[in-house]
Length: 288
Image (cartoon, rainbow, N blue to C red; front, side):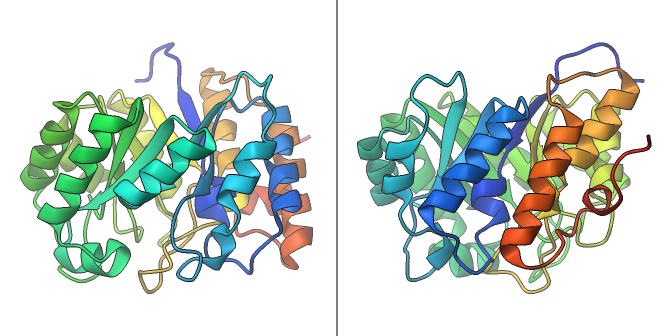
């Protein structure tokens, strides 16, 4: 069972959570970030330095970064697709970047316009120039195009990136993972990886619990359960921040994140988007 360990949450709502949505202005996205910081979250993925034509919701990334609170103790992360994006992020003042490398050849070409090997080489080059890099291995638990993914192949990618000093996060990009699948992949990679889970089939929290029992301590989450890849059909939202915090609180694994505050931010974000967020807890709140 889970021991008393420190669980790290990286909030990806301002990036992954919004990337498929109708664009919010920089001022609203900044307000969202400030609200999440006020919840006690200390690592936030705030922007993506990607083509604004391909992902209009991420327009104005450099402008947004320039407005971030300078006295915050938060770690600001940005997603970059390639060396050009990495250089743009660094010029804007970001020194923690995540870069996606897929275990699925077809998804890789749709997502970043490169095959797996070319994308992996680009990630290695990014790791050589950016101070802190997290390589997110997408489709780590299955591909919407090729189906099952070999855990050994996922582990081989992870080892390559870890050799550069980068951290590795395994992404269930389209929500294909199950607790059994999580166990199979972690048996190959070890539990020193992070997890980025999606709730397409309602299994994200189950998978997080299975990973916790296996010793995983790093998770990406999105307020309200928003998010999903624009380049994969039927990709559901992320593991909701409030749902993971609710589970961790019950397990006695306190993160310093205030659940009521996260729920309030989720509801406000739903008002901005014109619909309730998909996260279940955001709709009903926690027990009184």
